[in-house]
Image (cartoon, rainbow, N blue to C red; front, side, top):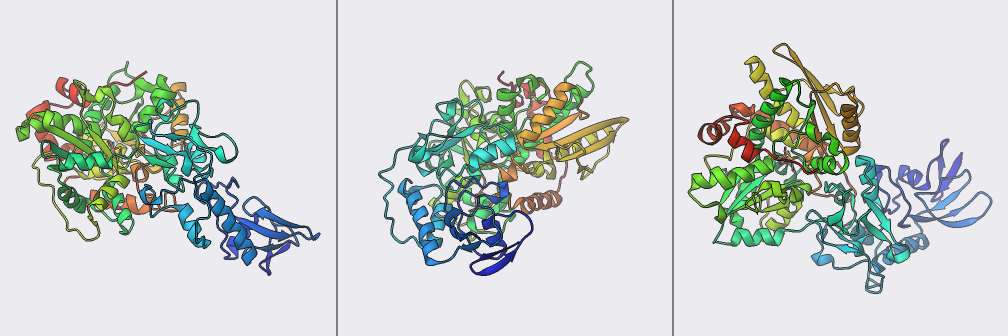
Length: 577
Ligand code: HC0
Ligand code: SF4
């Protein structure tokens, strides 16, 4: 079959949309709702309209993403008349859009604004003031919604069901009032479907979905001379923050983050890698205990991803007995800072404010769990995402591209091993645990674990380790739709694993819902970020958590041994059923 696009012939023998064919020929057709990474073309924005003349002479104006190319069809995608139509569509989108671009968290990175530029929208003919008002919801600790910036692209609805099989979001209302909102709840904070992973934010083309903004509070705390600010930052943060400053994807900016935080006024900077090592000691010991106890629930699942914990509590509570009781590294750090660290620096914990920088929106909710507070005071006072840290730095003119490297300068809780830094990529927690279990069960040391592609269709990787006469079967999973299937296998008694790592976000925290968003892209830098963490692992003096001198010091001076009574009190938690 043959059709003509902008008078050029295009031969095809399978069904293809006009948009796909035009792209193959190198013609640019603007799109907004269409999102290739999710194979999502709902056709709701109508920005991709084109003129066609069918073989029978019928003339039509159609959305190119939804219309199949036909034999003998002539398509016009580039004439002034077509461009005018496309421009009108964008102007109409602006007509019911809250146009506070300068104060919008998506400023400089918005797909709608980019489109307006592409199509040459010169003056905003419509002010965005006469539209029906849609939902604005700032009730939740992790995610906030400004429905007046929603363009009804439904990417958020799609990612939530494709990746997680949850369906926490839906489009509400009709006509100009239509916009995204949470399903089965009036307010986000009341949603028992949403797990707060923030992947919806990652695919939103505008500022309609945002992480809860705590930048101002962080700045106030850092500038407050009455309090002592302790800041930790997560493994993945060092491999993702640079993107926001135009550095090459996967640039490790660990040392520049230290400088930036000091410039902002942080009193102490600690590394979440340290507490990740502590987690391995606790979780590994817990797993060994379960393996030796015929009554214990196996397999055991990791507990460090808070969106996964939310999912289990909200969607499959019957699995809770299989979840490790060990707190996440963020929570372990908060707990240790308000106890041992306070002792070490000779300060009362009431003077300390713990700020945590995470690639994750769900960590904001984790920090507010009553189980992770002492006498009602949270161990972690404030959580910023990577995007918020970028805004915090930018608000003081700190440019990661130009500031010098800094060094951690606290002699305890500031150094992690190679096992800890790989926590930020899917499979890293399982690998770190296996390195230490290998040592405990065989007396030897290994720097890496031979994972292979998973046979289980819902897993990412697997490993079988022969350890002191026992075979330990490890599974690594990401995405909650996958995790759901693996959990079902466990509950049905058909799982072959002993230990399962689950991360909610695709590829793990390096693609967390709090990381840098790039227009029209999704998961594009996974490989570079993985490599950054792998290289950091290789460059570490210590590659296994049990070999960390700082971890050894913590047990020697404070906890006694892993899973001791004190460790249970301060480093483990309970879940809500
Ligand atoms: Fe992660 Fe973590 S690895 S969850 O993804 O376990 O957020 O980076 O900080 O807490 O360490 C996120 C990243 C962390 C925690 C660690 C774990
Ligand atoms: Fe947060 Fe990491 Fe879990 Fe994503 S995978 S929800 S970033 S902890």
